[in-house]
Structures are given as structure tokens and as C-alpha cells.
Image (cartoon, rainbow, N blue to C red; front, side, top):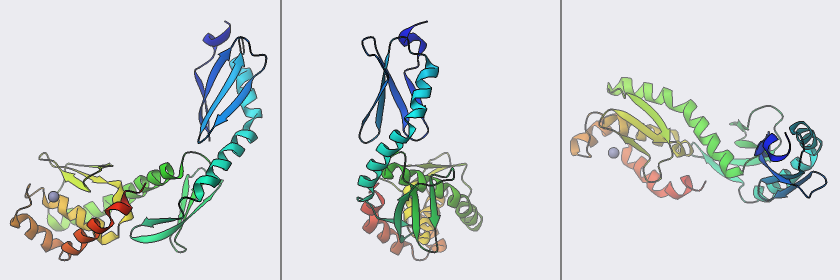
Length: 234
Ligand SMILES: [Zn+2]
């Protein structure tokens, strides 16, 4: 089989993502091109085999990584600090040799993002989600036991206007953006949503349950209002 039919529409590169394949009957050789921030395409002559194409992409690997690192340098000047569990962390972008996409040094308060790949904002939101997934189960267990209120299901979302919600069927969802807030603020939101399992409204009875388990709740509500913008900057 000749031409386009024998080739996929794109080939996925481990760092650059999908590289779009364009077959041009008039082109004589394979050519790779790049458009910032992360769009790679390759033009190939009619009849090129997938094997030859993959070989060509492997040979141009150093060039692909160079283009991506140039973009990362530009983007790294945009963000240098990040709020993590209420404390400012310094963001450093450098190649990470292991398979991890980020590393966090809690003693030095440094977040290392892999310098190659998607945009820093995408990598930070991935980090938030992952870290929130790690943190949340123990907080739910702790407060569920204390309050004797047990949700059916917990989900982590990116809810734009709310930090959390509780459905009438007993499912709780929380925003991964909360991982940027201090621990006691995250605990307040967990307690707030668990309290909805008992009272679905914001009645005095509801607030009395919240204050029983979180006496400083108004302080934490205030923190969320004051810092909402910061939690939405990625
Ligand atoms: Zn509520």
C-alpha cells in the first residue's frame, strides 16, 4: 500500500506529544517543523513507510527536545512562586531524569517541574490533582469518624465557583485547587461538605454542626474568600 493509507494521522512522541503527519506527493524528503508552544508536524513524500518515518523522528529527537526547552525557558520566567498548602514554594524547571513529572522538596519549599513537555500551568494542575488525591482520603476518614457522617462517594473536580459540593444522594466532590490552601482550610471544607450529609441547607443547625467540629470556621471561610483569585491562577 502506498501513501497516506499506510500511515497513521499522527505519531506520539514521549515529550512532544502527537506529531501530525502530512503526506505531500510533491515533497522529496521528510521534513519536521515546529510551531510554539508545542505543535510539531512532519511532511513526508508519498509512499513513505511508517518504519522510515519513526526512524526519522528518532534521529531528530535532539532537535525536538531543543525546541521544547526553548519554550520552557520563556514560560519559566512567568511563574516562579506557587502556593502549596498555604505556603509559598519556589518553582524550578529542570529536566527530571526519573519517570516522575514533578518533585516536591517540603524542607526547602521547592517544586521541581520537568522542563520538557506540556505548559507549566498544565503541569501544576496535574501536580495539584495528584497531591490532593494523596491528601484527601485521610482527611475524609478522620472527620467522617469524628462526625459520624460517611459519604457514599468522593470525587475530585475542578469546580470553578465552588470549593466543594454534596449531593442529596450523599456524594461529595471537592476542587483540587484546595491543595493550595492551608491544611486547616482544607479540613474546614471537608467538614462543611460532611455536615451537608446531615443538613442539606445553610441553616443555623447546619452551622452549629460545622462549628462543633471546626470552631474557627469563619476564619477559614474568610481565607478562601480573600485568596480565591490566587487559587484560580492556573
Ligand atoms: Zn455548603
